[in-house]
Image (tube, rainbow, N blue to C red; front, top):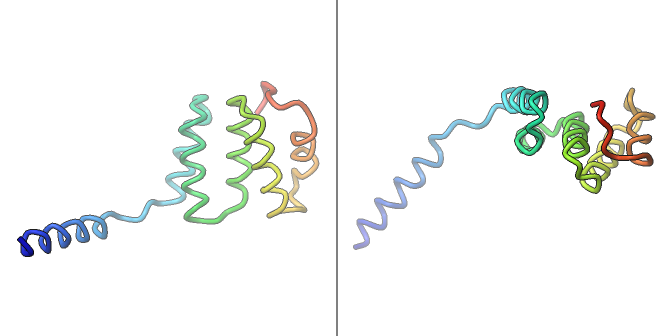
Length: 109
């Protein structure tokens, strides 16, 4: 019985370590494609995973935009604020502040 358990654990560990790490650039590209197709939940998932791996703050802006266009204003504002906290002097900071303070679901990305 212990041999079966040990073999199962060995196989599970080998399988988990054999999977390649996700590529943040590929995730961002996939998220952008989903965004262009108005598939916002999928875009959000890809952008979030890319951010987890790369810690690139511009992905926070992408996440906020996708939430905004999906109509989730609370999450959009949260991510806009986090983006500004990470990049306070971003070139688009005024636009981001306007998104935080203004109406949420506008048609233009």
